[in-house]
Length: 312
Ligand code: SF4
Image (tube, rainbow, N blue to C red; front, side, top):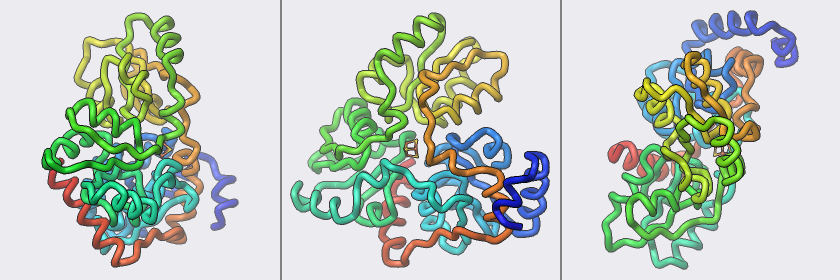
């Protein structure tokens, strides 16, 4: 069937088609927390970048369908090169990952006298290949703290996550001027408004938020960290969640007894929302949009990813 034909199908029809194709093709679905809730429902593994990287490394199935953005699918391919990795929408990239190129990083390493490069996983494979170790928002503090104290650290590309890791680890970092357009939009005014509307709620924000917003939060956590916070604090009945709406929707569905409020409804990642059920069914039927990484890049990028997984 064509993508247009799938687009005309009902949601139930798409779920049936996806289940049949999944069995026929021997596929596994890795789905990021920021995907639309209807896509989250097909997940074999759902989580943040760290959880999905760990799941990707252990996948036994022949085919990985990655519902997320391009750098995540690249990481899955690098960590499990024997598997075929496809994406429902080839155009689903991450603007933050595009804020640093391998050429820029090579020049910056020279300018800073060969620092240890800690690369957020939100980077291309080519940038990872020029880096010493990767990190995610779950483990950034631990990874930064693991660098020998006499070494200078260059952190790419998210300056907000880098500044959070610096504050928490007590290390000085050279920060790249990158940011996530979704999290960087949260403001102190958003916090004031949400606290006024929900005075008893506990506020959890993602470390990609600006430092002045993180400073006002009760908790700073990755998306998996937020899932654990809400699950492990049964006495907290109301939460304000400062991250992308996909996680807010996931938490609301999982905890209908709690008040789960977004810090801002503007927090939507258009790139993550490019994945739809119709595109999943079409890509799966045709095994389309295969993600590949040149061998010489993959080998070097894998070293940085493996070091992160060892330290996690
Ligand atoms: S939420 Fe931000 S960091 Fe994540 S994919 Fe979207 S733009 Fe990139």
